Structure formats: C-alpha cells, structure tokens
Image (cartoon, each protein chain N blue to C red):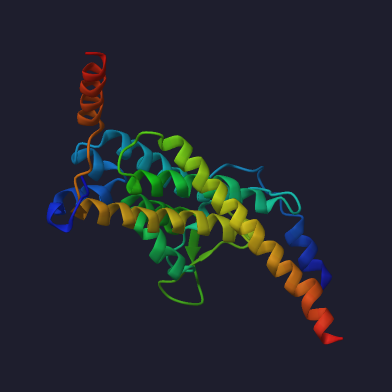
Length: 164
Length: 91
C-alpha cells in the first residue's frame, strides 16, 4: 500500500534524538536495523574524515563553512572541535582571544593537515553531517514504512491456497 | 634566508598517530578514498530511503557502484576537456 502524506507523523522527540546521536532517532521509532546502518554510516564517515585529515579536518575557527556542514553530526562534532581548539592550538600573542595552530618550531602536538588529506578529511566529515541532517528530517516527518511480516504471512496463505 | 627553513625542517615530528595527524597518502593514491566515501554515503542514504530492508546490501552496493562509475566518467570528461579538447581548440 503506498504511503501518502496523510500517513506522515511529526516526531520532534525522535528528531532531537537523531541529532544527539546518529541513528538514535530511528531506534526510538522502532527501526533498529536502520538505526544501526545510519550510526555506522555517519560515524564511519565522520571518523573516517578524522582518520584521513587528522583532527585538523574539524576546525570551527579556520574552516568555518566546512564546520557548518560537519555540525550536522551533532554534539560529537562540537566535542572534537573543542578538543582541537583547546588541546592542539595555542593563544596567538599578536591578537587577543585568538587561537592558532602551532608552528613547526613550537613542538606542535599534531601535524597541520594540508592539501588532499585535509580536503578529503573535511569532505568526509561534512558529508557525514549533511547525511545526518537527512536522517533527522526523516525522523521529524516520519512516514511509517510497511513491515515485511504481513507480506510473508500473505504469501504463505497464497501458497497454502495453491496447495489446497 | 635558508637557515630558518632548515631549522623548521629539522624539528623532530612524532610518527603518524591516527585521528590526530593527517594520513600520509603516498603520491596519487588520494582518489582511492572515493571508494569508502561512496560506500558509506550509500549505507546511510539507502537506510533512510528504502521502503523495507529486504535486499538492503545489494541496493547499497549498486548505489556505491553508480557513484564510482559516475565520478570516473566525470573525471574522464574533464580530463578530455582540459587535455585534448581545449588544446585542440586553441590551435
């Protein structure tokens, strides 16, 4: 049976859960398999971005527009950015309240991500955020999908009918 | 002018630490990262999109393949435009 707009339900609580942790919204809606796939996919992309580009791939100050997309992953993106800003950057003496990446002769705590690794890492994390926004919207306007069990039961009935 | 550059280059850097340092991608292998990217995009998109989860994995693989083939065709098209068509037009 086709799903119409009348079947859609507004689920703001599930949408909030989906933003807090990718997949949690679908889990709350009783879709554990979808939830697991979303969690693995979004987190795989986000941490895949960190794996390729290093922690420098998530930087709210230096790569603001990339971070706008990355923020869609939820609190995880903000925590990673916070760690990056506070643990891997230093105060800039020339400008007050500005933090900058450490220079190579300052014994930096991480290597600056440049070129392809930086671009690809930021792209992975940003796509993760944008996909999670799709998942949040899917939870917000949730259309109940047909479950496979009734169809299997129906097919069995047909088989039984043919056998009879 | 050269001395500070050598001072910087001589600073000892720790070995690669996953999730902290950027991965040392050798040469032109960076484009291979397209494959897991396409696969993971398909995993999430199909998890939202499909009506039921029957035959989910084949659908994911088909979509990932479509993305990779499309990107390869796009790359070939741009390569042909830049390397062959534009020089031919330029005379």
